[in-house]
Amino acid sequence: SIHLFQPIIKIMIKDGNITNPNELEDILDDFPSDVSLAFGYGSGVFAQTNHTVKESELPMIDLIFSTSNPKQWHEENLKRNPEHYALIPRNLGAGFVEMVNKWGAGVYFNPMVKVGSARKRLVKYGIIDDETLKRDLREWDSMYIAGRLHKPTLPLYTTNDDEILELQEGYNLKYAMSTALLLLSDKKDQIHRKQIEVADIFESIASLSYIGDPRFSAGAEDPLKVKKLVHSIGQLDRFQTVYKHQYQSLEEMGILSVNGNVVEMNLMDISTRKSLYDRLPPRLQYEMTYLFDKGSREIGKDSSPEKIEEISKILTKSIAKIVAPPAKIQSAKGLLTAGVFKS
Image 1 (tube, rainbow, N blue to C red):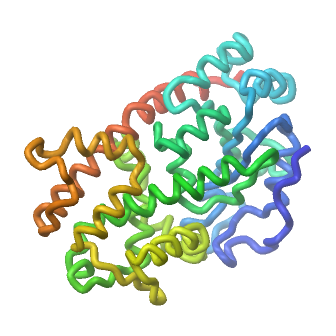
Image 2 (image 1 turned 30 degrees about the horizontal axis):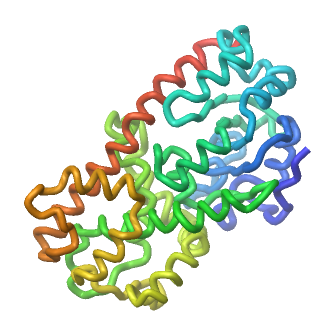
């Protein structure tokens, strides 16, 4: 079994943490141990309400497992937990499940299952191939899991080496911080004052993976989700911890300075914007250049408020082009992997 979580929290909701890490460790004991990464995320782990939650009303626990061999993992899991799989995938076996696993963003979800001593809590878990995850962190291939890792998780852990953690810190979080800052064009007063609220930056980060997500455009997600992700109990502190090194890097570059809950920086400065643009993933740079006015391909040449707003809109469209296609396939895939009936 994999022992990832230490018993650090005893009382739910006190600091916004509504899942005892012991529960997660116990849940993991029910699964195949061949994983490189496992983490919990979402409202079933960190409260997205500031009110007391009854135990019977606790949200579903979301988990992601990354493995070097999804087919082998599913083979073992089908033996251990056949009831987790919908009828068709269960009958067609691990080869079929592995094929479906590759569709869309490359994640196979089994939702609404009961495992471990936390059987009173429903669990949804997703399986992703190590290389697919690494590519998403490094290139924002789909932003499907990379986007979940823009937000606090419990906890990020690798069993074999530090490559995934290095890609998370050196690429994914760097991309998220730089993109979020370039998207702040609507905060005109703050930009003019050269003082930006840390919470606004984190809201911008938290919103990235929802840009172009069909669940949001269809109204299937809570419109206040982003605010809850940032402002619920303990979340601001968790975001600060996740992005601590990114702030330090940008401070060392002379781009910004952090003063309590305010970031002092000049987002109107051409060199600042060019530095942030250079820290975007190459695919996003390419999409922006393609969408940008052909007569002014040098995106960093003009920092007028109008041009900043135009670039923000182009950046938003570019992110949607990355997020939307795999997210749509994942949603459609859910009809097959979740199934109407599990037995």
